[in-house]
Image 1 (cartoon, rainbow, N blue to C red):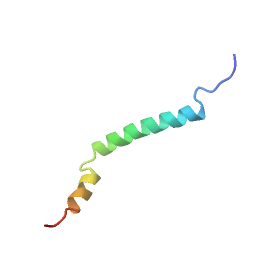
Image 2: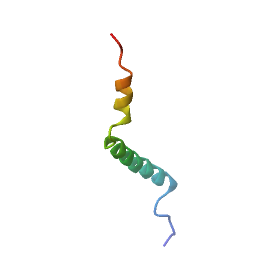
Image 3: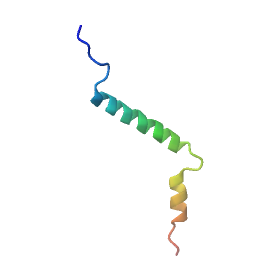
Image 4: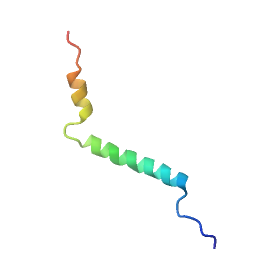
Length: 47
C-alpha cells in the first residue's frame, strides 16, 4: 500500500473554499439585520 494523504493540498483548498462560502453565506443570511441592507438604506438618493 502506498501512503497517500487523504486530501491533497489542492483538494483541501477547494473544500475549504466551498464550506467556507456556505458557512459565510448562512451566517450573513441569518444576521439581524444584514449589514448590506443597512448600507443600502443609508445611501439612498435624495430627490
